[in-house]
Image 1 (cartoon, one colour):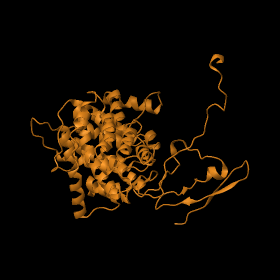
Image 2: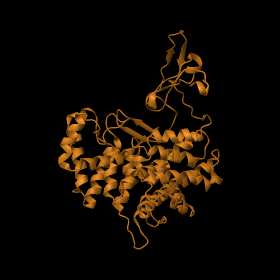
Image 3: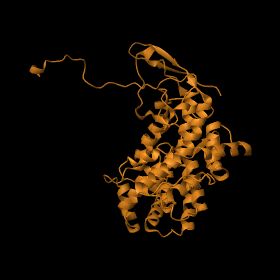
Image 4: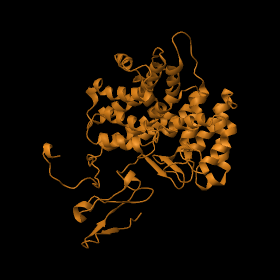
Amino acid sequence: MSTPSFSLVNNANGEKLDLPAVGGTLGPVGLDVGKVYDKLDVFTYDPGFSSTCSTKSAITYIDGDQGVLLYRGYPVAQLAEHCSFIEVAYLILNGELPNAAQLQAFDQSIRKHTMINESLKGFFGGFRYDAHPMAMLTGVVGSLSAFYHDTTNNKDPRHREIFAHRMIAKIPTIAAAAYKRYFGQPFMYPQNHLDYCSNLLHMMFAVPAEPYHVDPIAAKALDVLFILHADHEQNASTSTVRMAGSTGTNPYAAIASGIAALWGPAHGGANEAVLKMLEEIGDVKHVPAFMQKVKDKVDGVRLMGFGHRVYKNFDPRATIIREQCHKVLKHLGKENDPQLELAMKLEEIALSDDYFKARKLYPNVDFYSGIIYKALGIPVNMFTPMFAIARTVGWVAHWIEMVSDPTMRIARPRQVYTGAGERSVTALDKR
């Protein structure tokens, strides 16, 4: 594919700079503006980085206008239908889907690393009883380098692989321990005969006093959810992992920074906001009035879980997760749950009302994931930790891709300064 050339001209002095076009496999080209400041004495300005490429990556491709999401070239819908989360994790890390022998070896390696150091129990005990699970995840993941400092040489491919397997294996154990701490229940050790999602459900909901049997429908729904959340290109948390990692910090610290970024209500906390909105609406009979307030742009009234920053057509993940959502509700006999009925009414109106259709305000992945989590008995404050478990795969893959690149540089954005001009200090007695 030929790439067009572009030029930038400084109208003040007539200086001209050719901007090399950086082409990829799919999507728009990027313009290399690395020399703009040196040659033209200006910065590029792009708040929120909505038109700025920060890196080259071979992991995930998104076409927001067409509703396309590819992991390593594979449509996410095909992966959700034909693959397990562990297969997709292997794909995202290694670039290709595994054969049977590779999958077995990878799966066994992940199972081998599921336990966390026993002394971390004391760490959890140090958190206040009602600490948010995301606060616990951020702190505990950041501490892992204190336990595994012998394998944090970022330049060693084997160390990177061990870190990747450890991080993906341990994040469900850490999240489940945070859940148990919050509810004052005893921690449950991982059961390595269980698959990834079944093991998570067991660690969250089992208690020592009685046997617990994992619902395979629940485990399958989580598996699909995790596939859909595994990566999403250069989003806020992934970019945070890359920025932190660009300093050469240990990988656990980089992942902890991503967890902290994910916690924000505009990012991973969006599905919590959906349930909060449903609580505020209260009853299905109030839905038409609420939707009218949304259309009238009443101050403080927002339709959460609809539309997306990137997808301007529809969220391809939402189509897949919607099917899982209705399957789970039917299986659990919760089609008539008042809050879930309310959510389905919101969906019905948004999919049929011309106002919402014209603005592409379709239900997104956050809308349905919150409903599934609620139906499975997962509390609202665990929604974002569930997201973090899935997204850890993407964070790890992006970190490995970045630190493996010999051209990696520390991230250092610039700014347009708007403060006071240079001035002299006045003596204290004269101020």
